Image (cartoon, helix red, strand yellow):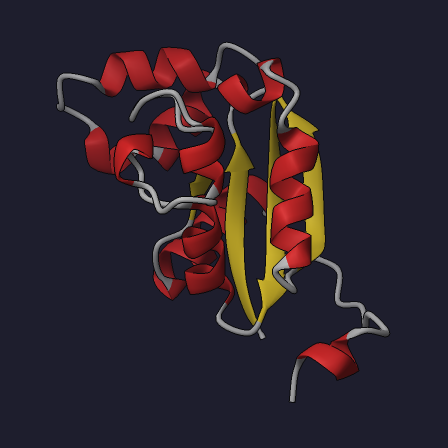
Length: 149
């Protein structure tokens, strides 16, 4: 089974949408194997968004992600990365597919509620970054036999 990191970002938390995000991912057949409510430190934010360092929006991104608690979660399932990204929709809510989380609730490209790993390599790196001290839990959900071959 594939794993992916999901961040429920400050705008989703402040608007009370965390449950909606988690519910949609679970209804998609994904299961939570790790979750934590946390305040992202500037150091963690800079490591997470290192690829954007030097870009004009970098400082604002760090300020935003550290402004309020977030939920970091690891979801597991068949094609978890693709399924999660489809459920969330395109980064810019204007371009997101109708019925996706970002199309339904996103405000703009910077306030788009969620982050999800974009590749298996990113997922491994991001999961280690946010859950290095708390590894995901392997558990069997009874409904898995109905969802996966």
